Length: 217
Image (cartoon, rainbow, N blue to C red):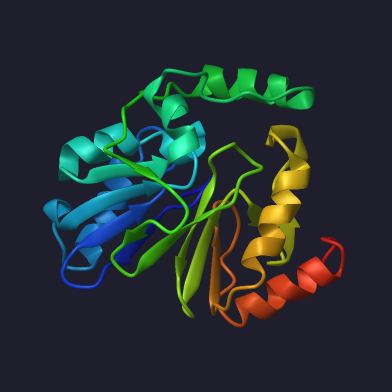
């Protein structure tokens, strides 16, 4: 959706899930995608946020109102989404970037319906704790098929893997540990929060990225 990605997933059965919602004002664009699948807003049963940053949670509250879906996020990030804690904390250059983002977009704070933990399941999707970018960042995994990684990983214009932005992440040591963790899984597609998805042999690409010392090729 321009700056960041959102994904619509067909769950087992008839329901849909939306993973991440982009910046504020993107709810209609997401529902256009739902409509293009021949589905209705009320078919969206879950909105899953990989983390609470405004470029991923910005349309969550509005989308929940339009769909009646249950809103889910990692347990440690739930207080940031609801407004009990600051939406984002960082240091250095990240403080400057947060000031710019904060001026450009006003994120509606919202209390989630579900707090997710390691191993939580929504349909065929399994939650994996992958902290580092934020304390409660999660990845969403469909075994053998795909993994949705939020801002844990990005891709550049050539589709090469890159780590989360250091200036916007809480702990790069944790980021690397989380990347190593998911590199042990098998999946065909890797779906980042920013950049092009890797749609073939993605787990091999991730293993190679880790083996290179996170430098890629």
